[in-house]
Amino acid sequence: MKGVIMTDRPKLAYAVTENYENTGGIIFAKYAVVARREGASIWSDGDFGGVSCRRAKWADQCADTGIVPLWLMICHGWHFECMGCGRRIDEDLPSLWEGECRQDDPPREQVIARRRYRKWEVTDVIGTQHGACFCDQRCADEHEAHEAERKRRQDHAIAVFKAKVLERFPGIEFADNPAHLRPHAFATKSKGRWRVEQVSVDFTFPGMVHGPATYRWDARSYGRRRDQGAKPEKAHFGKNPQRMGPLTLEARAHALDVVLDVQTRARVDLINAEEEARIRELIAAKTFPNKWDGTEPRADVWLPYTIDGAGRVQTVMQLFGDQ
Ligand SMILES: [Zn+2]
Image (cartoon, rainbow, N blue to C red; front, side):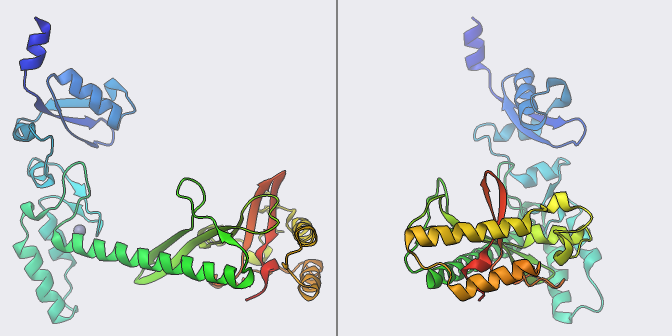
């Protein structure tokens, strides 16, 4: 008997929201308790009492597909964040845009802006509750173009890195295994300027003993040091040496030994005598070769690199040559 009821009962729409942050969505279920349980697992780490569950009759029309367009949710008091421009999308979006218009903007821009906020309708919102959300087609298009440009810059950064490594070590092979090591880059745009924040390529080489080597650039980790008020050149010796690793100079000397050892045993050309002498000179002078002087790091400068082995060892990509 119970089974028959379960089968015949239609799924209904329930609005389930987390109690503190009020995040949530529409769940379709035959019983409120089922909707609540499902919502709790999504928005409240399974805490059944941490969510509210109420009927949302207006969304019953979407029960067949389970897909609720965002504009419909907005009409019923929900709001979202645009994945493109980051604005809050609700029915007040036009007044938000209107408030952003400036008299001193170029006339053409003002016309475009005015047309946008006057013509916008809630049905222009793009997205469903299970996907990306955009104010309108323009935001979606701009986002797509932005992501395409990001990918182009990232691919370019990887190509530049690969070319540099290949130039120095013609015999190497790049690791490009989706499940393990693969080239990686991250570019971001801030205040109208693109910046490559991270690039990393891994490669194997003849005579490899410890595993693939990495040529890596990470602007963000260095950015954090500056944010903490430490001058880069003092960061390794400053008031908080533990954080930055007090063994750096020793580690560099050690790394140099490792490289020379590999070079001897594998009979590959890693560094020549002149480079070795220069590196020892820099270590002796406690010079950090990162070319930091408080200005922004450059993506084409060889950078320190961390190996996890018996303790974290910081070695210096400068060993590969100062480009
Ligand atoms: Zn937007």
